[in-house]
Image (cartoon, rainbow, N blue to C red; front, side):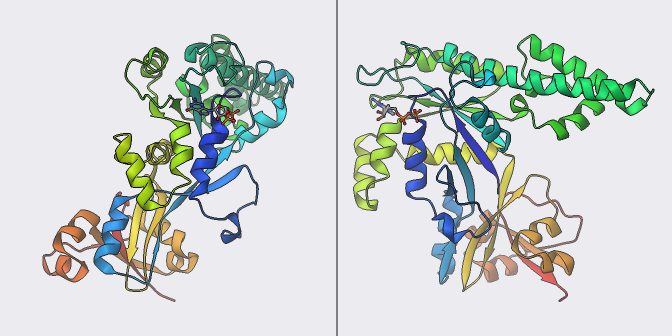
Length: 362
Ligand code: GDP
C-alpha cells in the first residue's frame, strides 16, 4: 500500500487527527496483506465521482480506494541521538512514502506545548533538524562504504561517493534532500538509502474552532510552506474528532454550523494522495463500482495488475471512458453510443478518472 506518515512534536494533535481519520476507516482485518498495527490506519479516499458513478449504476457494492496513514509516535529534540522514542520513530518514518507534518497553530491553556509556546516555524525546525541529522548519519556511513570501494578505482563507486559528498554538504547547510538537485548517481544511491528528508511533505495546520482568519501562527506556517513549495492543509483536529463520532445527519448539521462543506479530513486525505503522486481509475458494473489507485504514469497493464495479475498477463486492450463523459452521457451504453469509448493498448498511460474494462486472455 501507499503510506503517509503523520509526524509532529508531542501534543500538536497527531493522535486526535489519526483517530478521526481511522474512525471511518476500514478494519485492518479486512486487508489480509496489511500488517495489523494499531498505528496504521487504512483510510478510504473520498471521491465524489465514485458516489456519482454508484448513483448511476446502482451496483450491489461500492468500494472506495484506500491509502494508509501511520501515526508516528511523538518526536522530541534529540531523537536522532536516540532520545525519547528516537530511533523507533526514525525507523517508522523510513517505511513511509510521504510525510504529513502536523503543526500546532492553536492556542490553549489546557494543552501543554512541549516548547512552551505556539511557534510553527520553530516546531518545524525542531523536527527537520532531527531528520537532517539522521540523514547525515546515513549518508556519512554510505560515504565510508563507497569510499572504500572507490580506492580500487571502481568508477561507479567514485561517482556514488562524490554524489553522496555533495548530498552531505547540502544536508550540512540545512537543505533537505528533496530540495537538492541530484545527478544520476545521486538518484541511484538515493534508492538504497531511504533518506527521511527525501520524502515529500505536506503540512497539516491544526487550528482551533474559531477557524482560519486572524491566526498568526497559520500565516507564518503558510509563508514557510510557500518557500518550500509545500502544501498547507488547515484542519481543526478537535472538530474532526467530534465529526467522526456522528452519524451522517448529525455530521451534516455540525458541518453546517461551522460553515464547512465537508470534513477537513477529506482534504488531508486527498492532499496525501496527491503528495504520493497517486491517481484513480474506476471499474463499473452491476456487481460492483470500484475506485482503484495507480501511480501517475502507470500503463494500462499496470493498472490491470491492481485488479489481478492474470489480467495484466493476458492483457489485450482496455476499453476506456473518461468518468466525466461517462457521467454526463448518463451511463456506459450512452457514452459508447456518443462515441466516447476509446480502445487503448499496452502502451496507454492511464489518466485520472478513467473508467475501464480490461479485455484479456485467460
Ligand atoms: P499528539 O501528542 O500530537 O498525538 O497530540 P494529541 O492528539 O494527543 O493532542 C494533545 C492534546 O491537544 C489533547 O488533549 C487534545 O484533545 C488537544 N487538541 C488536539 N487538537 C486540538 C485542537 O484543535 N484544539 C484544541 N483546543 N485542543 C486540541
